Image (cartoon, rainbow, N blue to C red; front, side, top):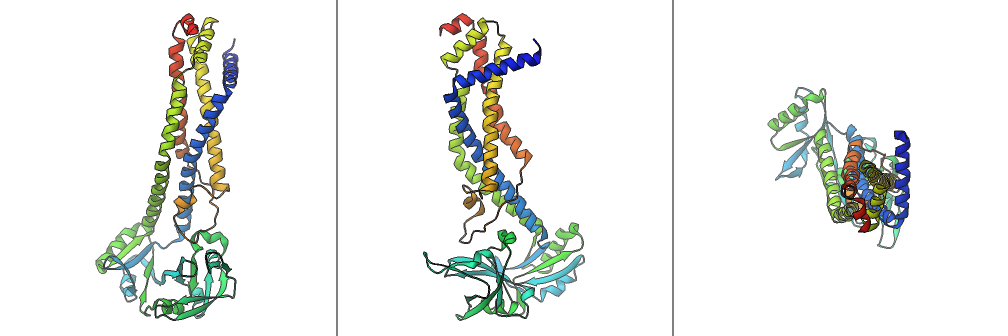
Length: 384
């Protein structure tokens, strides 16, 4: 008998053995699949949203300069621009105006930003898709459309009526859902900001390798400033999503360890029927190596089936059902949730880690008790 034919007969017998105990094995596969589905869903979502953030921040300013007042961000004088512009390596310095506005009608915080396209067009705004849905009461909803007007309460207590001239495209909803673009004049009027101050300054540099050097020179020139590099923002996002994913995994740890106990008990504790089966196989001429090989294929069939179904279910959950289970925790809390679909990003490294943590231990664990039974005299095994 050739080696391939021998393997085929062993696998055929293994499948028949699994089918004879289909109820027990099916319940194990279901629980096994569910645990892998939960872990893989967290990994897929965290990895995909970090990649999405990296793509979005790819066009972010290389350096942002903020001014600190009593340890908190304050408005920065535009007089800083000339001195920073003269630093060697700085290509351009642009002031930005942006801030947060609480809308009591919808209970949401909007991000207001002065936009160059609206320069010289006071009274007009462009809004994100999330801003189009405003809540008048908890049960009554108002849809804001183009040419409608939205009232904004200014810092002096008066109201400024701004007319919607456009809605930002849905493709950018991940970062523009709560965004309101206004003219510089209206922005300063809403927040009572003088003409010689800005929220922060954004810099473009000629050589990316000089970013740290330029940031150090800015701090030395103006000790009350805090330069923020684009790479630092990316690392912050990675840390945030890693932390949130870790929180979910810790919450799931109880269920995961309960499964480990169940799987270990099943894998290491052979039933009387399975022991008699091994004894019969030994009595009819099976070698110990053949029995161990059969048990290896049995463990591999169960664990691989659960792994593949769990991975596929997690993929469908994250990228085709908007991550219904974990999105609120991983995206964070907000009244205006952006409605977006993640682009599938899968890390082969993370898949490999999940494989070695779930498949390999179970497969190996099925061999140990079988080896013990296979090395005992067949008569004594069949009598138990």
